Image (cartoon, rainbow, N blue to C red; front, side, top):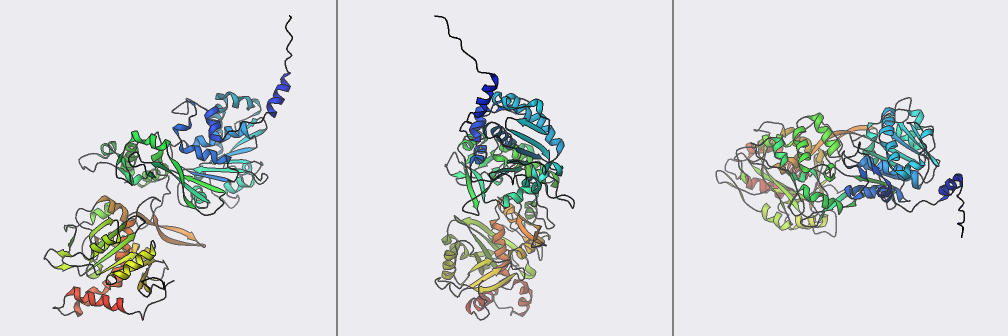
Length: 609
C-alpha cells in the first residue's frame, strides 16, 4: 500500500499551539533543577542546577509560589548563592508566568554588565529559555520574551524606575542604592510604585547588610515573619543555628593567627561536640527554616536571614582566619561583619572589647576577695534553660573586682553559691550581701525564689525610664508569695555607661577589675554590646545594642545587676560610712543592718509599673 502523506502543520500554527500550551506545574526550585544551566565563566560548579548544593535556597525560591506572600526579603552574606535566587526567579517567570518584570541594581552600569555577562548567557545556555528569548528585539537594559519584557535598570536612574508598569520587582544589593534627595524620592519607593497596577505583584529584595539604617535592615525589621536556618547536629541531632561564636580555634600564643585558624572547628552549643567541615554539608541538607520572630497571624512579608557559616563553599577555618586577620582593623572588620556574618555594622563613641577586659586582670585569683573589699554583690541573669551569675567585690569610690562567675542549671545551685563563704587572703570571711535576680523571664519562679531567700535575693527589672539609675518599687501580684516585697527597677543603659567608662580606667581606686585568668567567654559577653545613635520620634537617642544579633550578653546583664545592687546598698558613700563607723565594728554586721533596714519596711516604696 502506498504510504499516506503526512501533512505538516504550518510553523505559525505550531507557535500558536505552543503559546497556548499550559505551563508545567512547577515551583521555582523545581523549575531551576529541570531547566537552569550554570555557566563555566561565572560558577564554581558549572552544569545543571542542583538544589542539593544549596538546599537553604529552596524555600526562599518557592516562597514565590505562595499566593499569600507579597514581599520576600533575603538578608545574606557573600558566597551563599544569593544572586542565583534572583536569576532562577527570572527564568521561572519567563517560562512559567510571563509578566512584565524589573530588576533594579545599584547603578545602570552594573545592570548592563549583569545583563550581558549573567542574564543573557543564562538564556542562551537553556534550550527552553532560549526559545522564548527575542534577542534581536532586545538591548542590554531591556530584554524581550514571549509575552513579557524584563527591564534592567539602576537605582541611580529615577526616570527608569518610574516609567513602566510591572508585576515582578526584584531589587538586588539594595544597601548600595543611593538615598533619597531633595529632587528625587527614595529609589525603592519609586520602584514600588510601578507594581500598583498588578494586585498580585511580587517583590523580592536582597542585599548584604551595611548599617542599621540601611535598606535591607529596615526591610527585615518591618517583615511580618523572620526565619533563620537550623541544622541538626551530627552528634546529638538537636537542631541548632550556626553561630560565629561557636567556631573555636587553638589559643596557643606561639602560633600565628593564620595557623590557629587552620585548626578551627565548630562546637555544638547543645552537646559540646566538635563539628568539622566534613559534617557541614550533611547537616545543611537536612536543615530547615524556622520562624524566630512573627508579628502577625497572616504574614505577607517574609524575611530570611543567614550567615556565611552555612556556605558549602567556605570552611570554618576560612571564617576564623578572616576574623583573626581583620578584628584589629575597623574598616576590614566592618566588611567581615557585613559580608561574612550578615550583620549590620555599628560604630560607637563608647567602645569596649574583650582585650580591654583582659587588661583589667589583677594578681588576685578567682574566688578570693581583695583586701580592700567591704561588700559583695551578685547579679543573676535568668534564661529558659540555665542561669548566669557574677559576684563582685566593692570598696570605696566604687572600686570593684569580679570574684566569681558561672552558668548553672537551677535556682538551687544559685542558692548554694550565694550562701557560700568567700575569703580574703588574710582569712577574713565574707558572704554575698545582696543579689539582684532578673525577673523579666520566668517571673513567678523568680518571685517565689526571692521570697524564700528574702535576706539577700532581690527581684530586679529593667525599665529604662532615662531618669534614674534605679528606683525601689514593690511586687504587687497578690497571688505571689513575694507580694509586697521590694522590686528594684533599673535603667540598664545607665549602668552599662558606668561599666564601660570604669573599664577604661587603669587598675586601682575607682576601677572595674576582674580576677586573674579570666576566660574569653566572659570577656566577649561582657563587651557584647556597644552604644549607638538612633532616631526615635524625630530625635536622636543613644542606646546600647548588641554588636551582632547572635552575641551572648548574659554576663553583661549580670554585671548590670551587680552595679544596681551595689547602688542600692549605698556603695557610692562607702568612704563616708567608713569614717562614721566605729573602728571595732565589723563591716559585715553594718552591711547586714543596712540590708535589714531597706528590706524590712515599705514606707518609701513606689508602685510597680
